Each structure stands twice: as structure tokens, then as C-alpha cells.
Length: 117
Length: 111
Image 1: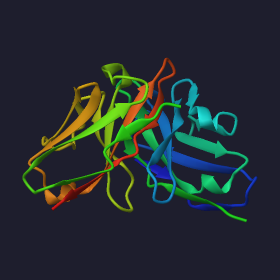
Image 2: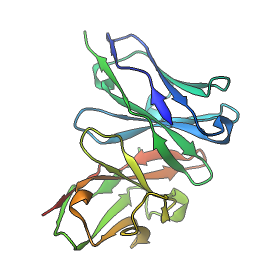
Image 3: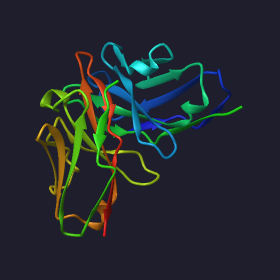
């Protein structure tokens, strides 16, 4: 199971941190991928983090603004996005990622982040 | 920035067969791009259907199959059901860091 934190409203220039709590599987055997979807648009791949060693791979266009972390003691992953702009308004999803088969399999319910002044 | 292109929309009759494709601006799609396919219905999170070109998840109906076709990734739906009406997205991975890029999606209508 993958359960995300609740919706957020932020002002431009602020930061947001979304959590993704997992259960029912060994956290360090898989990674967590993050995907966002702006209203009426297709998904955008943001990156993923290894649950084993915390290694990350980020989409180039988000490099420098995004940080993905994990807390293995609580099987929770986090995604922080800084310097928010209005076009960061989107539903943010996390999913269990299996790097062996390159598959984001079990998805959270999504977290709506609204950036508005 | 690599662009991944899908048909914007397709219409298929119930019981019919349809092929959705996924092309890369970087050249031919190969197994090394580990093509994934997702189905998304309104108000829902994407649901994984196919991984690594042709791998099916335990919940993926047999009528969905993935392949490579003419330099593109392809998703074939055989015996389309009304409940298959949805948006379909492909995801390709690139480079040693295996960075992902989604296609723009195909809106499939069953009519």
C-alpha cells in the first residue's frame, strides 16, 4: 500500500514537501518514483529514489529544485520541490518502483499541490 | 530534451483490435528503453499495464499486449471492451541514469 500526504496550497517561491508512506513490502527492496500531472495534461516523470541506498535520479528540467529522500525507519519517501511557480500546480504521485524491471507498479492516491498568490 | 510521441486519439469498436504506438525523437525505440504502458481513467491515478516492452502485471488482462513494431513501442488491445475506454500513456527510459520520459498520451474511445 502507498499512501500520500494531503493537498497543499503554496505561494510562488515557497517550497512543498510531499510524503509517501508505504506498507506491506520490504521498503529497501524497491525504489519510489515520483510523477506529476498538471490539470488536463499528461503525466511528467520527475525521478526516483532507491529504498536500498537513497541514490536518486532526477528529471533534468527539475534538477536543482527537487530533492527526494527516504526514511527507512518508517518506510516513507519524501519529495521536496522548491522555488514553486504557478506551473508546478499539479497532482503529485508516488509509486513503488522496481528497478529490476523498470516498473512503477503500485501508485499512491495523489497529492494536489496548488501554487497561487 | 527527448520527445515521446503517441497518437492523440483513437476510436475502436467493441470487440475490435487496436494498436497504440510510442515513438522517440532520439531514434528507434528498443528494449533498452524499457517501454512501459499505463492506463488512466478520469480522476484516477495511472495504472501500470505493461513493463519492459511486453511484461504483463498480474492484473493486466490478456487482451493487452506490448511489443516493438517498426522502431516504436506498441500496445495492442485485442477484443476491446467498453471499460477499456481511457487515456493510455507510454513511458520510455533513456541513458545510463535511466531517466524517464512520458508520451503525450492516446485518448481511446470505444464506440
